[in-house]
Image (cartoon, rainbow, N blue to C red):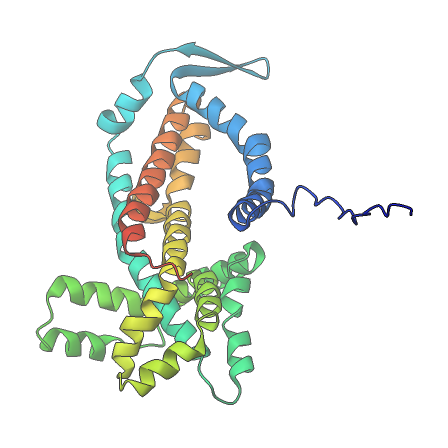
Length: 315
């Protein structure tokens, strides 16, 4: 008798990707997703940042088309924080404007997203309308709108806010809060324009919430406010964190400050001092830029550290 040999069927070897567990796959795709940003930072951002840091501790001069620097330590930083009569005030004003604008942007963006997420006829049309602020935030559209604003700067506003001011003042609300509310109403176009991206992010987060959660809350007899506090707000809290980072960075990048009886961008002030002064102050301009960059970075870090403790991640 011939001995029958057991011929076991060999399974094809699994690839390295299929042998990875789910957490490692998620980490891999996260790295791939961030790879374009990492390459852009290394190739286009890191070198200018290091040069700016070096220029900020030097007395720079342009000789024969090349920058030449003499190391002077932290003298530029000392003058920016203690000698310049405008920089510190502008920095505080930029922080104050950011603290007032960002919470209102987040609130308005979430409110608009909730309205656009409702079930009603013509929802697609209204969603398309709220994409317009993102288009208006582009360079060409913003320039044309700014031209139109300057052209009608001397024309009386078509919106009479005296009745609103009288109503708010007579209601007993503190004067500081009244001034801030009226300022928000007067600048409602700018506020809506700057919260277009946040609205889209919130709309995507709201659509990702499982309808079964709302069905359970309805069966339990929860009110609309309780449903919002217990379900909607925790589920969109990661998006709130993302929108906070975006809004803070965008507010610092476009900060408007008062200077010489006018309003100008903080970045424009730094540019004018650096290149349009009586003498080119390349080193001092680099020091102001780095201080402003560091202030924005620290602000984002502090806000993220505080808000992230209350962020709810749904598995």
